[in-house]
Length: 131
Image 1 (tube, one colour):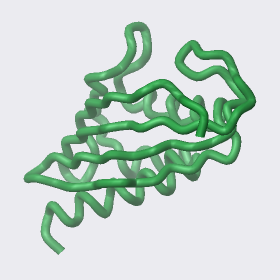
Image 2 (cartoon, rainbow, N blue to C red):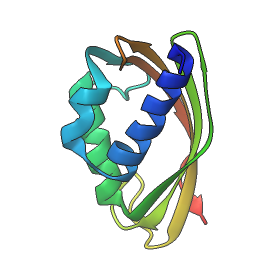
Image 3 (cartoon, helix red, strand yellow):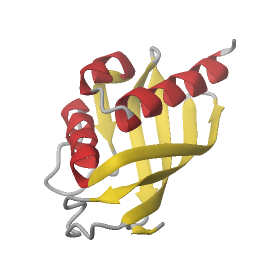
């Protein structure tokens, strides 16, 4: 496998094990100590601790969380993903109170990889809508 294929495989593993699986303890294996989230909301941590916060928040807000990777491609040291998050909205998410409905929302990410770990992140996401 080349570097780009390795980076795509790392992203897929991260999404499956950390975001979907909720395995916060694995974050250090995937996320570089110098990590910066360039899309972090004001007042939220933009470092590696913020990745753990978001993962916990996802699993608090969405029961039965599933993450579908629609596209995952790499160019040089950047991986781009198009994902759809699905679950029952049981807790607050980004200021939206729980609806109790099954919802889904798309996320588009760009992640820069250094030394096999994610070092920078940019994202765009839509609010949850009924599935």
